[in-house]
Image (cartoon, rainbow, N blue to C red; front, top):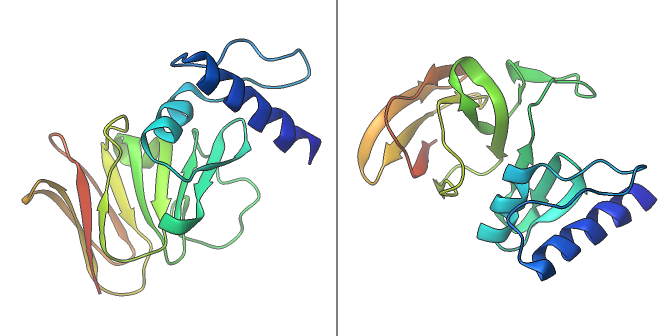
Length: 157
């Protein structure tokens, strides 16, 4: 719990100082992931879990810096947990990840570039879109790379 309090204190100090990325933390603490800090500034309601993880309970959204899949045993599509929709910063489901548990039209934070997406739901499909232009369609239990820029994900049951 003290690690969480330390991470929250660092985040608050960064936000109050108006910096875009956190200053060096104390030797015992890891600095917060800079992209996570930008997303926290852009999307209200986020809660820091650790230096590379934040959640937005009301949006059912989670950010993970460079996920490695450790600590989670049930996975449907790579490191995208069963029942979730995931967007990745790099091709082939690599890099930092945002994930959602709800199936609706989801706004992707502008500071997060989506290069691939996974649909770990058991039915339906999703579209990664720029406005209403579809950049990729992903069936249930599948994934796809995304071409072009995108600003939303639309999920269909």
